Amino acid sequence: MPHENIGFIGLGLMGSAMVSRLQDLDYHVTVCANKSRPNIEAAIARGAHEVETAYALAQTSNIILLCMDTSASVEARMRGPNGVIAGLRKGAIVIDFGTSLPASTRVLGQEVAAAGGYYLDAPLGRTPQHA
Image (cartoon, rainbow, N blue to C red; front, side):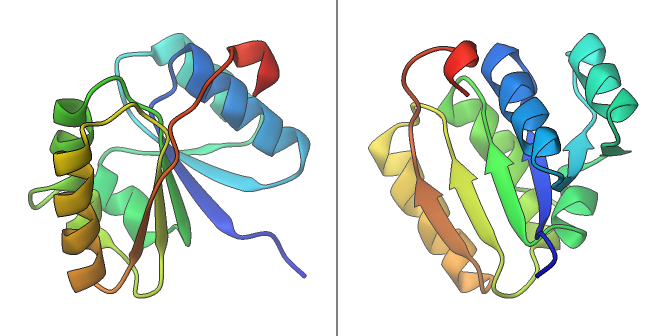
């Protein structure tokens, strides 16, 4: 069975370690341009594909993983014409690994469901070495 197409937004310390692990397991990973250029470049060097917007990432991904610092950061990448929700495939799964605010998570979950997807809240613990 082929691996799912995974989109990943948020390649900080933890996110880049998670992408590296997915690549070790031969998953096709698409990453979204952001300020962490060294981490993006490392993922690309290992075979990741880069897109410019969260919309483009959602268009090519069955599973979208978010590893960002705040609810505001998650909301900014999820909403708007260039956001994940606008480009979401029917049946896609969005997983938020951040420590997002419960109220924000509930509303985003409703918005993703209205777009035909599924939203999971999965805050992380531990360190990048455990990714």
